[in-house]
Structures are given as C-alpha cells and as structure tokens.
Image (tube, rainbow, N blue to C red):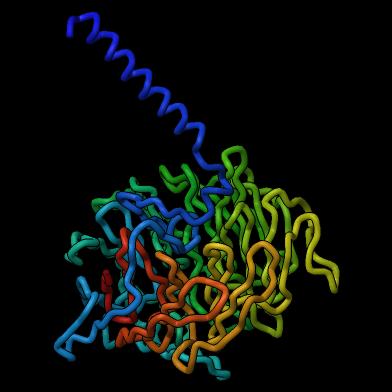
Length: 469
C-alpha cells in the first residue's frame, strides 16, 4: 500500500469513527430515560449518596445474589466477601465512590449505646447523652480494609435521640472530589477523599422533636454542583438552606414556618439541566424550592405527621410518600408543578399530580420504582406493589413476623432487597406477583439502607459492615 492509499484508508477510518460517535451522541437518553432502569454495566458504578444515584436505590448491569449465609459459626458461609466490626451505634448508610466505601458513626466513650427495635406505643428517649465521638471512616470496597478515619467532634450530644434512633443517622454524600458529613446539631464537615478536613460549619442546635419527644436528626445533605442543601426542621425554627461547597458559606436560608412542623427526610435535588429544585418531605406540606434562590416553587398538602421517606424521581416524575397519624399518602407529581397543588377532598389527581393513593404510602422506608412497578415496605410487615403508570394497586401482602422495615428498599438484577429490623433481608422477585426468593439472616438488626456496586451488596447492620457478592 502506497502513502496515498494509506492516507485514504486513514481518512475513511476517521470518518467511520466520527459517524459512529455522532450517531451515539444523538442516541443519548433523555432525562426521563435516565431515570428508568439501565441494564448496561457501569465500570465504577458509584453509589454517592443516600439510596445511590438520584436517590433511586437502583444499580443494574451486574448479577447479584439472592441468597447467602454470613453465619461463620456454622462453619460454612456463602456469598460473604468480607465482614468487619464497626464501632459505635449509627444508622448512617454506606456510600461508594470508585474503590472507596464511606460511612459515619458515633461511639459512646463509656459503655455501649442501646438500641430498641420494633414498634411500640411507649415513646421514650434513650439514656445516652454522655460523652461521644463522631467519626467518618473510609474502607476499601473490595477488601473491607480500613483506609482512614477522622473524628470530627467529641463531646455530649446537643439533643436527645429515640431508643430506635442513633446520634449519627445521616448518610454521607460525595461528588468524587469532596465528601460531606452532616450530623445536625453536631455540625457540617467537608473532606477530600483522602480524609483531609477542608472546612466545617456549626449550624447551632437543631432539635428534631415531635410533640416534645427527641427523635434525633436524620436528614442527610443533598449535593448538586457547587451547592449543598440542608433541611433543618426544628419545630421551633424550621428552615432549609443552601451552602457553598467550596467553603461552607451560606448562600440562602428560607424559613419553613407555616409549611412544616417537622421532617426527618433527606431533601432531593432535581436538576433537569435548565432548572434545579429542592423537593422536601414535610407536614403539613411537602414543598419544593428553587435551588438558586430558595424561593418556594410549589407545595402539596401531605398527610403523615412524621414525614421520613426521601423524595426521588422515576420516569421523569417525582415520587413522594409519608405516613403516621392515620394517613399514609403516596403521590406522583410532575416536576413542572407551580403554586399550591394540594388535592381537594376526594380527588386523587390533577394537572400537577399524576396520581395518588390516600393510604398507600410508607412510614419510615422510602419506596422504590423498578421496571413497571412501585414497591414499598412498612414497619408492620406490609409489602405493597403498585403499577407505576396508573397507581393501581397490584398486590399487598405481609412478608412475615420478621419484616419490620425501617431501611429503604434497593433493587438490582430483577430483585428487590428489603432489610428488616429483625436482621433478615427479604429478597423479592420484581414483578406483578409477590415471590420471595430468599430470606437471609444477618445476625444483627438492619436499619441502614444498603449500597450496591458492581453486583456487590454492602450491608451496614447495628454492629457490622459486610459485602455480599
């Protein structure tokens, strides 16, 4: 082949590659498609925040296990890649970036923090307000080996906690460059991924109480671009605020008086590329704010007076749920909503509300949308499935006596994973009929939401961190 032939061959090859690239770019999915289930493997498959990318709880593209055995005393474990003890008591869920796994914990300096699971009428605060230390830890996700830890504060908690709660309920968040930890009254902290503390901020006492009962702070930070959104619903002074990621400087603060008397859910930032809004669960109103200015965009009268589940987006629509106090609504809302979109008595839909179910929501656990269906689990063992396009209830069954669910659902590889307070992970086959594929004993209560990356499930129990794959 002479030089002219080589040049023509090279030009032809470049043209072919450019055509393929142009075609590929034209075929990039829309925002709606991105919120649907993706079956393509993702090499890193990060899980950067509570419930993973977009707070959806879904990580497809790799096979995941349905059954496993983590009981080493039996002499034969299966599926257990590694298991390590984690000090202290915390319901902070694991997050993942690359080959690093991060969690937060709080360690009582004298004695062991108590945990009381189950559903009960007598509401007591834990006798747990002596010296503690709040710590952020980093592990190698493949081996469980600790890479670093950083204690951010030592002292007495500024507020009380419920017996089922902890003094470190919130989940960390990262953008791959910086790592954020927010412990409510114990402060906001920003690290790089090597564990170096870049800055910290004290927001004062945030007493997330209900009828005078201290329940503990549990709203994780939300991050989008250079802005951090924090939801601080102390009934005496409820507010939402945005902070600069670079230095923690407050950008805006909006009072939630008249809109919310209490919330324990994580705010969700929806950014469609042209506009960003912060959607917050709350009672009596679910409210969305402009991320740039803090101005209220829309509000929706909810129902449950202890709102905990985190909002998220599926199929381009916002999914909202709360419960307690006799009502348990489930809503699917258009992101373009404006003003007061509360539904009149007896109505279940409107121009802004695609559909709603007055008593279909969950109390503590955040629902999940996977394929054509929405699933939720509750503290009383009820597991529900709805057709996502219409809101039609497909089934409602109890998983069993070992199925009080406080952790949020996650899904992968055609399976829904439902961890319970009794320390059992129910694995449900996705689809229009309830089929429990397995019930896996973890040996310890599970109140933290699992993380998933590259086909491996990461569970944080009351005392351990383990990888199943």
